[in-house]
Image 1 (cartoon, helix red, strand yellow):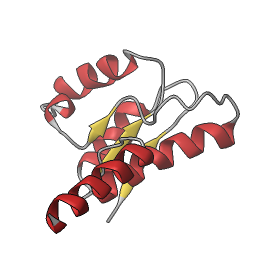
Image 2: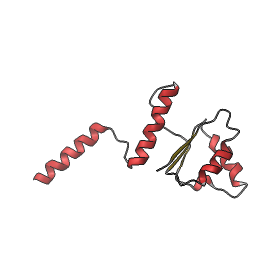
Image 3: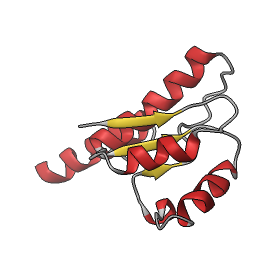
Image 4: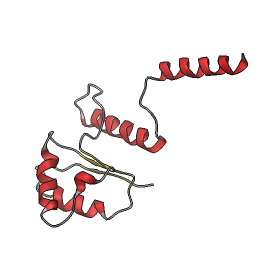
Amino acid sequence: MTYIVIATRGHEMDAEYLKHALGIKAAYIGMMGAPGRGAETYKELNEIGLYPDRDERIHELVGPDLGGKKPSDIALAIMAKIQKRHTNATGDHLKLKEIMMSSAIRMERE
């Protein structure tokens, strides 16, 4: 499976990169940048007949807020989102998942 993250400085090439990414059979296309930046990119692509806002593979917010600011922290957050998508996970806390699984096992035994 292919996962794409578009992370550019200045965003001048975002529309071109997204246009290319749309043609790839990718499970996930993430766009890094300021909130709302995707709208400008989408508008550029809408003008040439492409509609990325209708594509469920595209995620403007590429990762959960894990509190970090360093590039390695951001990379970890991006990978967490990709892993969630790859495994179709809920993103719930693992402890909650353990409790739910424990309860389900107990109910099966009864």
